Image (cartoon, rainbow, N blue to C red):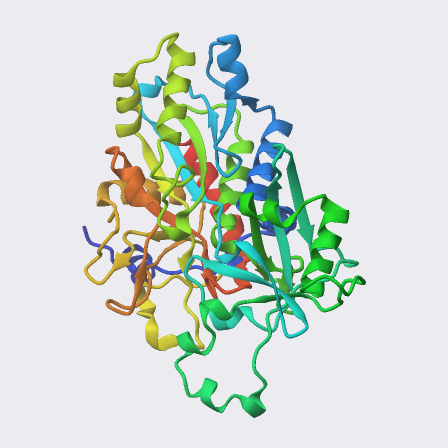
Length: 475
């Protein structure tokens, strides 16, 4: 095939990256900003995986989704257009929109995770040392410990008392609340600390959170400052020190998500990884009514520590949910149909990608790294070194996805996690792929991944929503 027009030849042969802001019209620009205002509300209400799950289910119910448990109790049959949700121990969920096509021919699945790096309180966290009371913590996920000192922190969690009562705790988010804090060493005395490697300057056992300094009025009690904190918690929440042993309490950065940049083009927030992909996949499935393929939005926990446990992607939660969906479609449990439904499915592992950071160019291979503001990122493989631990998507499926994006004016780009042998990481893609389904990593590029405050472009959030919706609606 010969093309004589040089301009057309260039357009035909070269893959030209696009800046989202330059290709959208005024209507889409307004849609973009509106979506991101909603996203900021989602972030502020979803600072832990439990709260993210609550927000997901609340929004699903508002859009007419019905509990799978209710349908099973009534043995109510599902039909095309039925909207169903199921939760997993308040830390994960799956939303289904039943398609017109037989489910055995596969589903369109978008899977994200709703946990983020943080500090967890130890089971016996409260202690007193030199006229100060502290909480001891254990960090969760791959974070840089030195980033978590000298900043306002908030406490979120649940406590289960001996009588079975569930108590929810939140301190540090309201403007009238106190905040928590981890001290750092003053530079005047930090000669030895500053000679250490970054990974050693702040230790895991050194991430102790200040919670108070006023002693209890009764001088006959030992550790009066610790006791005063316990008394305050008892008066407000009716919990005791023993109740900490059956609690799940997380320390996260205090405060709301904020627009970043004089042009308000970006969002700075805790928890973009991976709630940005959870939000966009949730918004996409809530905005569809009829599909050929059954659409599934899957939200899981524990990705940041290997997708383990009964709320992680390696649990049987999703397979069990599909089994129940098949039962309500066919009137009986059919393992063969479940296996076919999973094996014939197409899935996007919705997780964030590393965005090129001009401040640290040496760790990126720029040509194959996603850039902020250039659309949803397609990541063929993650892993480390020789692609270890990754899914490595098949080109047939990548072609299927890029055609969907091209046909629906979705601005997209490719990405990978830094230079070869520079480091690495993984997603839930390989776990979904064990069923035999086609899986591709696909999500929002970001800066400062796993920092207390991360950065995404509003343009990429919008294009990711648009891309996920097009994927759900594709045949």
